[in-house]
Each structure stands twice: as C-alpha cells, then as structure tokens.
Length: 176
Image 1 (cartoon, rainbow, N blue to C red):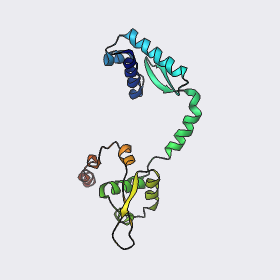
Image 2 (image 1 turned 135 degrees about the horizontal axis):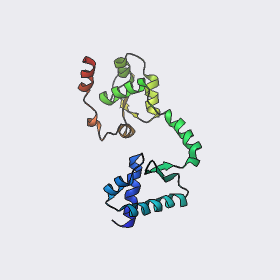
Image 3 (image 1 turned 45 degrees about the vertical axis):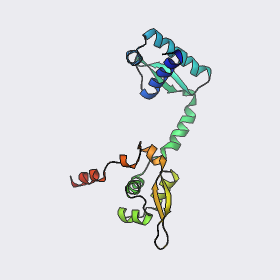
Image 4 (image 1 turned 120 degrees about the vertical axis):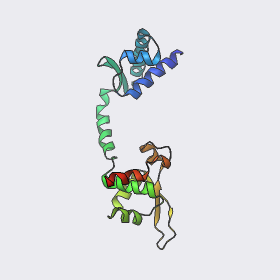
C-alpha cells in the first residue's frame, strides 16, 4: 500500500464506522502496525485542520472517530432542523407504497386504495422528488400518472423496483 492509499483507507474506515474505532480494529483491517496507523491518523488530522475542514479526526473512547467541527454547530443545527422536515409522514408513506407497487397510477386510484384524499401526500412526495408525473392516462380528463424517481431508489437503497419486497409479504403480516 502506498502512503496515499494508506491514508485513504484509514479515512474511509473512520468515515463508514460512524463511531469510535479502536486501534486493534484498524490494525486488523489494514494489516499496518500501530505506530504507522498512529502516524497516518496524525497526518490526516493535520490535513483536516490545515484546510479548515468541517471534519476532524479525534481520539475518543479508546479509539478514533471522524466528527464535525464543533465550531460549525450553528450551521449543523440549522441543517438538522431543515432536514427533519424531509421525514415522511404515515400518509406519505402509504401513498408512496401504493405508487411504488402500482405505478403508473393516478391520484384517484391512490385515493380509492387509501380510502382518503391523497392531495397533500402526493404534493409532499412531488416536492421531495420521490415521485414524478410519468404521463397522462388515456381516459376522460386525462389524469396524471405517477411513478417513482431515482431519488426514491436512493432514499430506500434500491437498485431497481424488483428489489422491493413482494407485496405478499405485507399481506401475510395483515393475516397474522
């Protein structure tokens, strides 16, 4: 492993861990010695500090962790507050599930399956780019047809729609 690669490996391990990583875990994962890992951690820490990064590497709880710079807490709090509005409500989740499994589907069809008006949920899902208008149905009034988006796939970690659990899995839960 060349030095750039070693630092990149340590950095990636700390990033994906999301919690303090002890030295023995880093040694096992990298097959580097403790002194070498300590040197690389010091260099990474210095790299982040020298460029005024929003990320720091700190020693914590007998390990090392990648954390945000506490000096940026004002912006992090603002972002967290904004980001919390991105959570999906129960009506939005129900609507999204129907659209995901039945697409392309009209809002009227969603309303009929849910038994309530889905205007708010559909608007919310459109605003969050989890669904999109994929066409118009060839019926009187030509209502919009809705389908899921790439953002939907990313949000739920799906490669394609066939990765959705079979609808029969949910029907078993209701019967129990």
